[in-house]
Length: 175
Length: 314
Image (cartoon, rainbow over all chains, first blue to last red; front, side, top):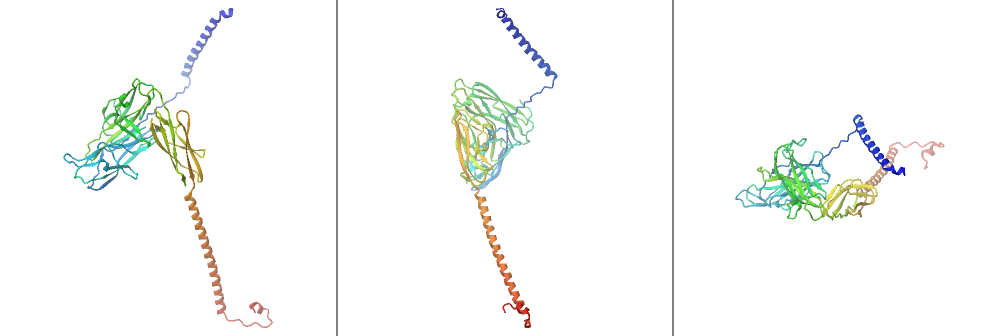
């Protein structure tokens, strides 16, 4: 009975002993750390990035009515990304036609303008409704980026002599 | 806030965005993510930020399109929507995602387009330049994982490597699935050789066709190539292809070489025989000539044994 009566005191004593031990160990630990050659883990967090560069602001194709004019490497760019899933580059026209200067009602259909990735066999008509894929890869780029080159070709219809313009939107994207 | 960009190529136009993609796990209702936009070139840039929807084609092509009325783009706000950057400057663009209280479960795909409008340069084709960043927004609720693989396409016959493989991967669920190292898809040929497919993300309700090369197959083999994965619910999926490897060109080349060798040997033997015959004939002729040009020997004296040797035919 005497033992059971003392149980709460014994329990309390054990708790205090453990608490004191933990406190002492933690205090001792910090003291040891202060005086020993401790190690530090360096963590470097690297962001995923994508850079589109060296893409020209414009280019020109010149020719006679009825001619098919080709410009190899008319557009070149550099894409740099460390995204492991790679990236794609597409091009889409902002309008359905190439239009001339004010007063000229002649137009050139956008499908007359065709594109291919340099080295490819076939030209694909540019569209204002669908993006045309001009480069795709499932791996990250090289350390200094990937140079991507596009060839352009235009089949010039019988239209007034003029400068016909259109905007092409290039989009580089990751996934 | 503008701050200098370090270590970038010195070209007139260069636009950098970080991070290159953002995935919001299901459960968050209000999330803020900053994107760092920097002018890493030599020209000043005007940048417009817009929200789009995007879809994925089997070849990985990402198409950005204006958002529809029910698009999750309405959950996303960007600030600022337009700004100027001088060379070596940064701008933080804050993207705030507010998931509505009870949306339809599944993942949403929203694109953030950072575009530099075309400049009038006096040429006839102007170029607009943009970087698209995908946002994959998880939504609380029932998540459905359901994936299939196959068919695995390979040539039925090949006379050498590398062998081109095409694998179709379908995601029928309502969230994207990453097949990223170490969980990327791997083909196993001859039960031991591994052919790694590239890392790939397949968006919800999308199909991808991914390609790999078996670089160094054996010369002769009826090989089975197998890709194993799971359907997202714990069931094992397998796609197989069989390739017959026979080095036809090599074998034809060796046969032609052997044929040539046999023909050359036969010709050489014939020439050798002919030459030997010619030599024999020449020898005969020379012997005959010598025999006819020399004066006829005196008949030997009777009783001499040499007479028998000189004229054995007698």
